[in-house]
Length: 377
Ligand SMILES: *Cc1c(COP(=O)(O)O)cnc(C)c1O
Image 1 (tube, rainbow, N blue to C red):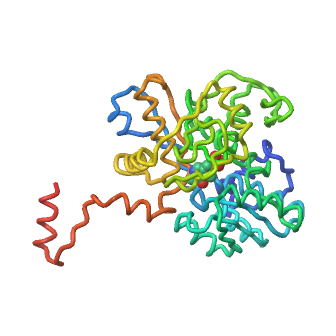
Image 2 (image 1 turned 180 degrees about the vertical axis):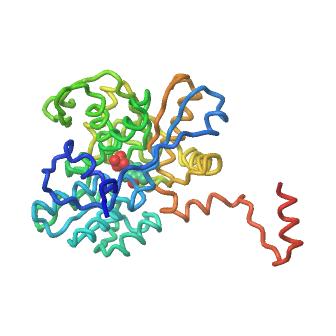
Image 3 (image 1 turned 120 degrees about the vertical axis):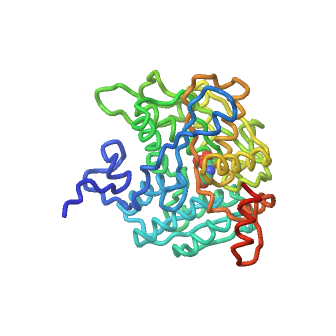
């Protein structure tokens, strides 16, 4: 039987544009290749002539875009002989690290903020067999500890300060350019640690560049800019934060970040300079959404498009809608929003905000079922 057309994940798919060799063994769960879904109802509702697409990263193997980075980070860790990986996480990185470690047959240690991660993510880390440390502190405390302990124990950090993470994550832009035949005019996404906005920009630059030879783009701290070509046709990058965890809006780290969008409950982004450079080079901007606005966008996307994402992910669409309505994003534009994680990750927050949902309790009779239908048509 021929397997020639079987999709086997993004390391195999993009081997020539990733820092792997022809013989590197990919540790993969067939991540990537996610759908780019055109919104049908929301643009009509807001009454503006725009094309909005969501890149639904919640359909990755562990339910978030983190899998794109993790396949690369774990592939390289294994290639380099590492027997254990470690990360600090608001939930999705730990779920992904745990899964890819299981796949590779190595150990995963994860540090998560006690009581502040969504139920589904907790279940994942446990099921995949990670050694989970719940810390009495937030993500930023965990990140500091992970950086320190990596010098004192034989573990590979797989947070996005691991450069292979961003190499994997940049492939999202390749897929979008493939699907649209061009880059969008605007790309909107939620920003926490700011690795993903950085990876998107690297990917777009590489995908749009019209160079004879592939040229890898990275952030260069010495010049505080990205290396490589500066092609026309890259999108304006827009990053949205939660108001309670919006260091880019405050212009400084936030000591006690707080938001219902736990995936972006981060006060001290590790890719601070990178993300600032992205916004500058792309003539983009950062903005913030309140928790109420984030949850409204989450509900809107579910109820009017059938796309259920976690709260953090909805910041992209909520922010885009606001900026389209305000005219900051012009009519006639093509907009892509990264919908970073699956709504099933956080059922508690979803159910809590659906108190007004129609949930009838009836007798098991045809009469009751029938009248329930007729009175709700
Ligand atoms: C990690 C994560 C983010 C934030 O991405 P950064 O690279 O940290 O900016 C947003 N949404 C979800 C669902 C995430 O898991």
